[in-house]
Image (cartoon, rainbow, N blue to C red; front, top):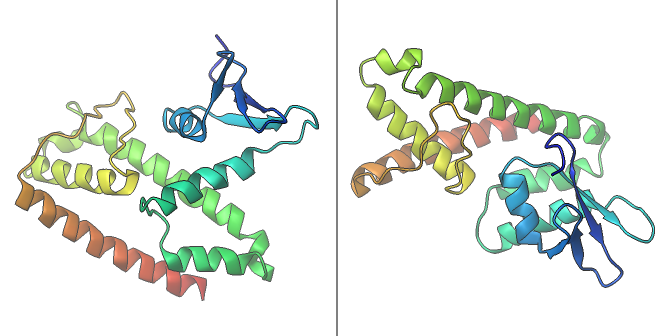
Length: 187
C-alpha cells in the first residue's frame, strides 16, 4: 500500500472516468470526497495531457454538496470570493483562507486533546455540558462528520432533543456573529 504522506493519485481517462491507481478501480466524486474526509490528500491528473485537475474536481465536490443543501459557505463568503477574483486582494485571499483553515484544524485538535478523558479540562466543573456543546458545534460545522484524532474523539452520543436544539441555536448565533465580523473585516 502507498505511503499515507503521498497523495492518492487519481487518473482521469478520456471518457472522464476517474481511476484510483492505488486500488486499481474506478471511483466517483463521492468516493474522492470520502478519501479526503478520511484525511487523505488526493491528486487528480488527466491521463493524456498530465494536467493537474485536482482543483477543478475539489470545486465540483463543494458545488455538489452546496447544491444538495449541505451549505457550509454563507452567500456573503461566496460573494466575497467572487469579488476577490476581480480585485487586487486576490493575492492575499488564498493565504488568508489557508491560514484560517489551518487555525481551525489546530484548534479542533487541541480542543479534542483537552476534552479527552485525560485532558486538563476534564477536571473542570461543568465540563460535561461544555463537551456536549462543543460536540454539537463540531457536528454543525462538519455536517455530522467528526474525524477521530485518536485523542478522545467519540461518536455523537444521543442527547435530549430540546437540549440539542438549544445548543444548536446558541452555536448558530455565535456563528452569525463571527460571520458578521468577517464581513466587516473584508470591507
